[in-house]
Image (cartoon, rainbow, N blue to C red; front, side):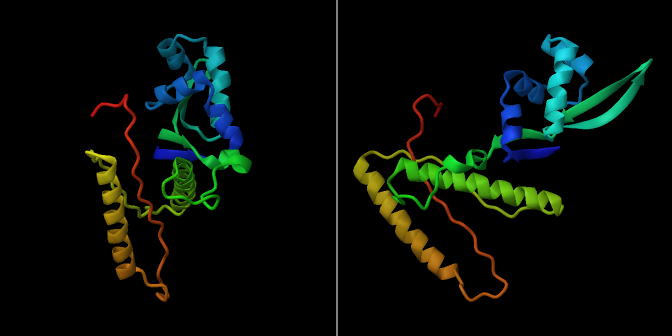
Length: 196
């Protein structure tokens, strides 16, 4: 089972969004069959079989084993990942594009950068999985509380200067075996409904 599966196929994304299928994916963190899931989710086994086949067809669940039970074969499945994310690639023609109106102070541009990050890291993760290799990434997450808009602006300016200096120090355009990496730093207000 993968940690995260990035769904980039529109058909698979559509299949995954059905409320019953979302419940099945959550329940299949532990292997189960239509019979065991019917009891757990209080839904008819036949209905669950229909949904399980759709999830399996798109690689969202995987077969763990088949057990013979009298004249029947019980199929035991589990979720392909412990978490799922839908890539912006699913909405190919209308996904946000960072090249359109780049503006460091725009929420629209921040979302376009986040969408690109999700799309690219999803592709890299899929490639690393096929090659049976780990994907080297790095991320920092934190919170900062500004006393005023002026302090927030001063922080943004100082952070930009520091990042430009650090990038210039380590960037080597002529490195023959080097690999270009993306650097994304974002600051946005924390939604008021979240706990501190």
